[in-house]
Length: 600
Image 1 (cartoon, rainbow, N blue to C red):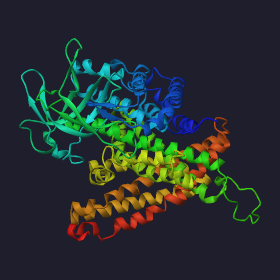
Image 2 (spheres, rainbow, N blue to C red; image 1 turned 180 degrees about the vertical axis):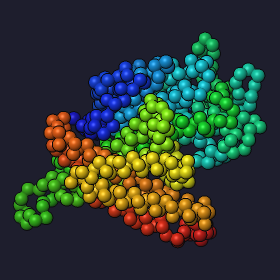
Image 3 (spheres, rainbow, N blue to C red; image 1 turned 90 degrees about the vertical axis):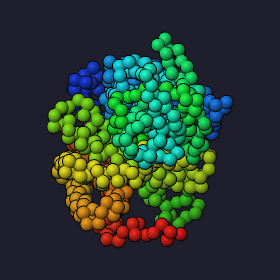
């Protein structure tokens, strides 16, 4: 039986029932596609994942990239894979036809990324970073720059990157010190260094297109003075010939996991000959970069889910074949041992993983559906989806990332002592997923974004719109006996969330922003649990509808497993909100009043 690292039935259930791609195919932007053609893309992603990405996962983990004579060396198959990612259209899949893309719904694009990430997360960093960088160029750069860079990026010949972080400026982009000096030749000369640049240099591509943040000389201080530049490692001339552009790789970072993709330390302009081309207008770089960052944040959440999915199916397979112990009620020691999946606590661990993986993937598709709606709808509908997406983004990025750590840890626990060894892949997944709470902003950053900006955005309009949408699903669930209690519980918790929010707003008014935001991470966790509960209610409704219709499209076991996971989430995860509510309403702000010198 082939190894399984995601459920094709679950992907089909989400894309056909919960977030029906058939509806998207009716839109003008996607009218060239059909459910059948989009299903073929999913099947192609499955083939790519199973036949090309998964087979080299452990090799990439055991033999990480290394720097040799100023060049990063990666797994020898990555060069061929990048060409395949380009030639087969994976990099350009969601791009408009006019740029050589396939104009596929972003939800389907993200689904393929989920499948490939579950197979081998390191391999997908290369193409999908390029996708994001190319989209930024497509959105804000001149036609001339688009024509120079996008075709080579979409072909997989040139790698795209995000070059934000500096040694003294991580989450605090205000403190970026890289500089850009204007010339009279249509380009700038940049100077600076960037660290933690994913796929920033390697031998699987011919060139690297860094989307770099820097300050033009004389620019205003703070974020208002940051501009965005295209900085190629090799600059092309009018004939397409490449010349070294004074971008050097100073080193690579050796990581806990995610070994197959290099993370580079880059030096720009050491010889004062690093040419850079301004993207858009001066001093608006951060607003441009946020497009790529926000799309990447949804992607980070999806990547975390993909690794948790791989770990879940790894532990599920093991639990079905590993025999250990007997039923507690069995007193005869001569009776054969039973598969560990028959023990209640192992079932608890498996249901925990399933509830997290399938609930989080549903939330990812909720966000990508908003993206597709923003791209295809107009007027009030477009604004509604945009605002809901803005509100959901910090949740979609952070909750799957945080919970993937717990989920992969639980998968490891299912293996017992074997899980801690390299005999099985459980420890690999545990190491692999840890990066996602750091990628594209730490959890604390997103907590402050949610509570400090998004919740009260436009006088709370985004929150009201989201809550309205949730309450509509709660109402729809009420007519099903098996869902009624859970829908009611979610409605009650939504009311408590609103109470907590208003309490914190009063804290902001009376005690200031530091106290207000001191527990923003916990507020994010509370909001996130309710968002996942909502997703399980949505899935539960579809299960009940399919059962009523007597569907043959899904097995009875598949539908029952959905209901078990829903029950698990509400019985085991939802109660955690009570402790969070108590904490968020407390007037003891120990993390604010504690003095640094007193934390010993």
